[in-house]
Structures are given as structure tokens and as C-alpha cells.
Length: 429
Image 1 (cartoon, helix red, strand yellow):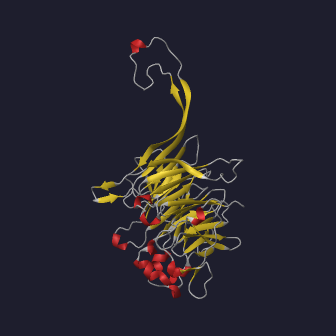
Image 2 (tube, rainbow, N blue to C red):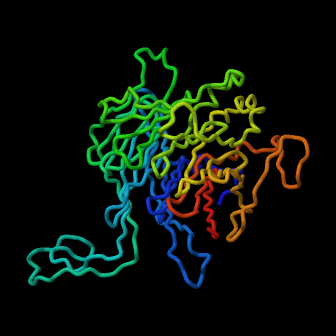
């Protein structure tokens, strides 16, 4: 691993995603690469080896491009990865940069055909006059090979940067969202998509908000939600109209005028939205808080969790160093009882919805040794300090946990910290 000081920008992890069984874990980075990790099977003699994820395949998903019409460089950075539910021996995943979405097939090969009639062992066509007898080709075992091949490229549908992709529960369609529009695609059709949300004003000077994230409901293929930079959530029902510009529900928290400041609008922007596995709740993340919303209650969130409230007094300097625009993601555990999201100093936070207990943990080299137990960390704002407490003033804002993922059924979490991927497992639950 590289030291944190000299990390090439291309090695910084930009997305993390478990597949539907949790056996595979994919990461994308700013260099356009996708790395897939596979979980090792359980070993009776070594109980601690189970749960380890080892590299399964690495491939270049996107290359840097140049838009000559607009004189714009298009980065190769992977913005999002989404797995398709597995339907045969192969795995499929979608990856996207700012403009182009690609569908990849990941398959294994452990046998090779031998004994062709018309080809020699190198694959060259034989002289037909030398073929005097026919034989049945046979499959011979070979070393396992993981093959990754591009199956479809979905391009030229987004004027602005793609921030989200989400596979529908019908397993046939998916959506891609940029700052002002959401498009619906069929997985088998690359040359056209259907625009289902368009919030672009006639005059761009009237623009007041942008789309920040979007996701399909896990069970109802007609429902989707998207979040905005104004801190609102809009639930859309595709049965009501072909163009979902008119939402079915608007989730918005009334602002407390006494808390209004220059930074109010920036810190209220929603950076991530996730449906719970049950489909009943929405989890959102803004700069300082994580919120759980009930789909049946639009006027205020059901629960509000302070992620790093101690930064309220530091918003000025966070604005000056651009950290205030960082986009933190959030995640549910498999039973929707615990939520997780990242913070600074390589800290990440977990909130138990039932007991209301919360914990701050650190993703670091020291804590990532095998069988190491994560120690809770505390940040203090002056006054009395305990021995292991960290002062707000000594937090490292260059180390930030923006991307996290939770195994769909087990207590295994993946944390991306700069160019390092940490995987933690709870052995007791």
C-alpha cells in the first residue's frame, strides 16, 4: 500500500458496492479502474480466514476522453458501480463516469475445448485437404481464468455529470441521474433512453437547485426518489405520468429561522439518499446530519442523527478549504436497524436506531491488523479531555470517509479511505 502522503489521484477510491449476495465487492477509482474482490469460503481449520476478501479481477472500465464540441475533458473517474441481480453463472455490473455508463460481464473459465477438426491447437485454420478423419472436440480442465468483457455502452444521453445509477426491481431497466435530468434505460437497448425527470428551467438564470442523488424503490418498480441541493426529497410514481416532473410526495423539513446562516443552504444539500431494505424508510445524508424519513410522513424526518456537530463552529474555514462541498454517502445494515456514514480524520459513524446508541470508529493501519478490535473514538470541543480524546482543532480534513458499503445480510462493512479499502467484520453477531 502507498503511504497516505503521496497518493496519486488516480488511486483514490471513488465508489464501493457489494453485490446482492455479498460474496463480491467492487470498488472504482479516479483512474477509471474497477477492482472486484471475492469472499473466501469458510475454512474449518482457520476460523479467522472466513470473511476475507481477496482480489478476484481488475479491469480498466473508463478512459479519459475529450469532448471537442464543448472543449471539455471528461474524466475517467468511476462515479458509481451497481451490480445486477445474478441470473446465471456470470455476474453483471454497471459502472459510470461523468457521461458514459457501461455494462460489464464477469465470468469464470476453467475448461478449454481441444481437438477441433478444422483448427489446429493455435487456432489457425487447417488445410482442408489434410483433414482425413473427424473427431469429437473435448473440454480439458485449465487454470481458473476470470474474464471481464464489456457488453453494452450507454452513451450520449447526459449533458451534465452523472451522479447516480440505480437498477430497477424489474431487472430490465435502470436509471441514470445528472444535475438536471433523470433518464430511464432498458438494459438491452443502448441507442435511446427515456427522459423521466427534467428540472432544467427555460432560462438557466432561474436555476435554483440541482439533483444530487436518485434511487429506485427496492420492491416497487414504479417508484423512485431523488434528492436535491435544497435539502428536499421527491418521490415519483411512474404510473402517474410519463414525465415525472410532478412528484407524488415532497419530503422537506421546515427551516428554523433562528439557525439561518450564510452556510445554511450549502450544508442542507443532500449528498446521498438510500431506501431501506424494507422499502418503508429513506436514509439521507447532508453535511452535518444523517436523517431517516418515513415514506408516510413528508413534513419532517422521523429521526435525525448528528454526525459531526462539533464542526458547526468551523464552517468558515471548511468553506475556505472547500471541504464544505464534500459529498458523504450513507448505508443501512441488512436489517435496517443500524445506519452508517463517514466523517473526517478517517472516522466513520454508526447509529443504532433501536437503542439510540452511536459510536465513532476509525479506519487506520493500526486498527486494520487481523483480529484487531476497533476502539471507539471521541472528539472533544475544549474543556476537559479524556486520555484518548481528539481535539476538533487536530482533526485531519484531508482524510475523509466519503464512500462506505454494508454487506446485504451480515455485519461486514467496507470503508474507502483515500486509496485504501478497509473491510471490518463483527465476529460476535
